[in-house]
Length: 132
Image 1: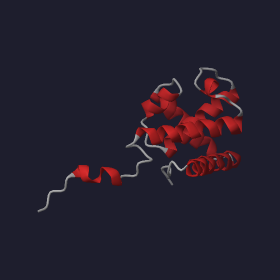
Image 2: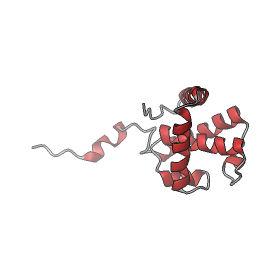
Image 3: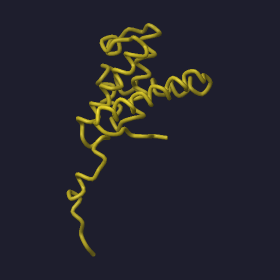
Image 4: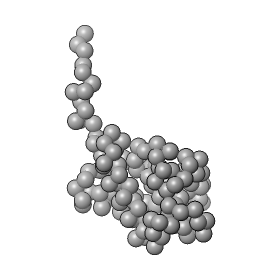
């Protein structure tokens, strides 16, 4: 039986998701930009503790998109917005629940995902995780 060195395959793993932090951070920055452009809510508000509806929804969309498009842990996602992993779990659940009856949100989320993918591909920094 031939023993395979797992380190021989380090370069062949998709470098844009999970294994290489700098690419995930590039995708996360792109998600921030897309959320800002489409909702008008700046990063400082998303990172804050304000509970206004538009800010809360932007924060929940950010949590949802990062969870769906990267392999970041819940704690790391919460760290980007100064929230706990529990808040991230709740955000993802809320977005999924609302999408079950609000087709406008489904279209908005699909648009945001496609916009992030388009921007990442145009920047030449690779592809994002596709959790379909």
